[in-house]
Length: 112
Ligand code: 5GP
Ligand code: ZN
Image (cartoon, rainbow, N blue to C red):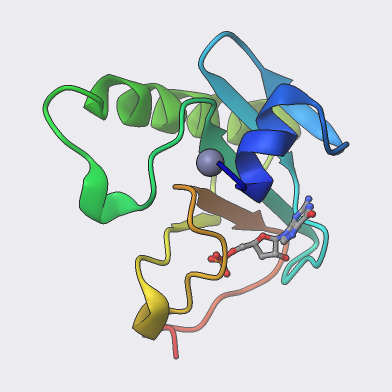
């Protein structure tokens, strides 16, 4: 499968890693929208949030544990945003499930 984030997960395409374990990788976004902009992905290919099921959702729970840990370790636990764009109309450009973890500035709401 020709998937950018699968290749980042295996290391075939390099990334600036923030956290890694057997099932999850977190790395800096190449085009940051905030002073801190980290992407969290499952290493297994899941296309989007629309493809989360009872069978594969454990890794999603784990991703959120990792996000909280990164926020605490980097000292921004009191203010950050997690976003997952699902599908073309929501602006999903990479079709491998990922969560944007952003911090370091104020965020407006609702997001545009
Ligand atoms: P989406 O638009 O699908 O929600 O988010 C995809 C994100 O991946 C974008 O924020 C984009 O900057 C980031 N991105 C795209 N290609 C690369 C890459 O090769 N390396 C890294 N680190 N981030 C990427
Ligand atoms: Zn993939």
